[in-house]
Amino acid sequence: MSILGVESVVFGVSDLAEHTRFWTDFGLSLDSAEPDESMFRLASGSRVILRPHGHPGLPEPDPFAGDGIKETVWGVDTTDNLERIAASLASEVPVTRDADGTVHAVCPDGQPIALRVWDKRVVVSEASPVNTPGSYPRFNQHRIWRARAIPKTINHVVFFSTDYVGSFEFYERHLGFRYTDHSKGTGIFARADGTFEHHSIFWVNADLPIAPDHFKFMHIAFGMDDIDEVMLGANQMEAKGWKNESMNSSGGISRHRISSAIYYYCDIPGKAGEAEYHADTDYLDDNWVPRAWDFRFGSLLWANNAPPIFRGDNIPWDMQFDANRASFEPYRKTHPGKQPTSDPTLARLTADDEHAI
Ligand SMILES: [Fe+2]
Image (cartoon, rainbow, N blue to C red; front, side):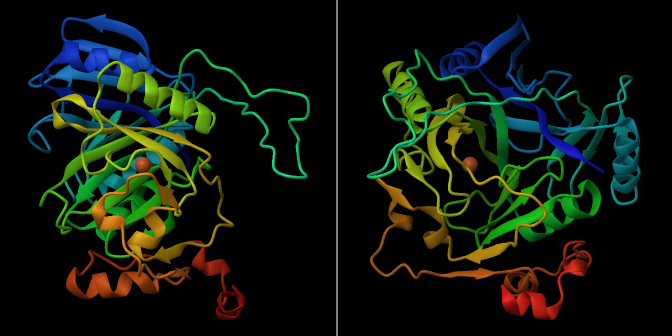
């Protein structure tokens, strides 16, 4: 099977005009605007679709109250692979189909998903080389100048889950997602097998004090060329009056230690969650060895205004390689999983290999 990433996300919104203005200002290209739907399309072909609450094209029942992503549509490379995934899903949850072949299901954590064959467009961006003392690949050249920030790809989506390990294991069982990293007690990062971005989805533990106690959308991240484009977007959004006041947004621009990515979050209207400008993330394949992190150590490499939960002088440099998923054990003791996970990458990893890591 091969899932190529997020083909589209479908938002349910209370104010279609306000949400349409937000995403236009964010830098997305408006593909179509109808009285009951706005659709934006990125260079990769991925789409952001906005529909008012009650629209027949939104999942029923509503997975959570309020605005946010109500359905995540994963793009699949071939019809054969779509059929394999649909059959696998059907062994555990009800599956329905549209006339065009799109498959719909609801994950055990409450996330509505869909899958369809997707002719994903290749996007190749270019960023300015970075000069350092004694090493200056940008010799006699200035950096790239941009008039505005333009998101190129959808890199990942994030949801709160009442069983974040179980959420990952369901995706692994049926969609073939790969375990990338674990922010211990906080969330799991996983990658669609047909992508190289560090993660395509992140599930955040709904037991955290800062989290809702139920399944909910948190944020969506868009691929940008470099830190200059992220900062340009941040400045342009701020100039247009869009806020960054939510807990997730308030740290300003920073870089995660997990995934290495530069980020800046903007609050989506209607308290829907956040839209993230995202650059210089880790790209990886099945050679990657998953890691388990103290959540504070993994969260921020630096920040100009980190939320209090991430601050402190005694944050341990705590990271272990986690190919054997030992980090899942404390969680599993309190949240028994549906069934044990069999990780295909583990079959190639002997005990001696693990020792050598
Ligand atoms: Fe993110």
